[in-house]
Image (cartoon, rainbow, N blue to C red; front, side):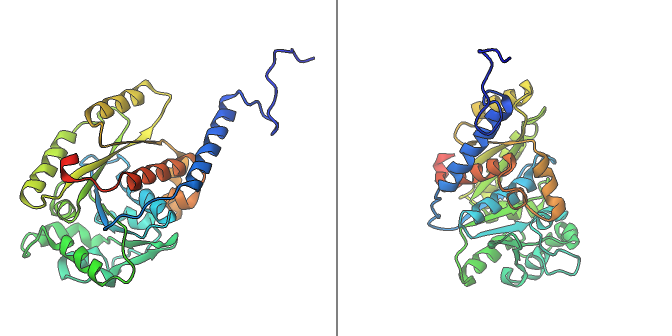
Amino acid sequence: MNSPNASSPAPGGYDASTPLAREIADLTRRRIALAEQVLPKPSRPRILTVANQKGGVGKTTTTVNLAAALARAGMRVLVIDLDPQGNASTALGVEHRADTPSVYDVLINEAPIDDVVQPSPESPNLLCVPATIHLAGAEIELVSLVAREQRLRGAIHDYFEEVDQPIDFVFIDCPPSLGLLTINAFVAAREVLIPIQCEYYALEGLSQLLDNIKLVGRHLNPELVVSTILLTMYDSRTNLANQVVEDVRTHFPEQVLDSLIPRSVRISEAPSYGQTVVGYDLNSAGSLSYREAAGEIALRGEPRRGDS
């Protein structure tokens, strides 16, 4: 016989007081809120370079999932894969074999972006300029070219002039180093988005990255600001992750998003299927987190230079 003080099962047959039930209720609440959310389109295209000189911080994952989330919300989004590994191209399901027209042709041969851009199978609103293996040699080839730091910026400007449907957001995925590819990305963008993983040494190298961004801003692109910091690989069960969140929010109170991206099997699995987590499992915790982060970015709007 059950004790009168025992928890009663919820109508669905589970105990509403258990951690699992609370998690299910929270996910349901978040799904409903996202379904009701209407995001404003920017008055001009927002160009964000996603950068961190440390590898393994979720940079490419962040790029493609924010782009996919905004595309799902009705934005027209362009992803430029500027990493020779081509992982963003893979995650978006676009062709990027060695003979595929790519961002290499844009940078080195001055091909129009319209000649190399591909739609992602996930959404007609989600476009990608792929990277191929040829991009690995582009750093050396750029050295001798005229206006070598400005080539991506010029190509994007020309694309905006020619494109039939206006672009709302551009995300540029960088390699984890400061070479001419990353400098091109900084010069082309007006905003920098920095993913920071909630792990030991999370802030290592960040001051150098910020100094480099300031240097580019001073000499090559006075519009450039660090507008957004996104905390990734968060595990609420560890004191370390919570300490990193506290430290980063203390140092960068204006730039850090409220949304936290959790460690997630679904996020890790999605690229192997040529998908973002938003396309792979829309209602998973990882997908909801990226969709919430994308909503924050859209609702905050583009910062003025004095805001950062």
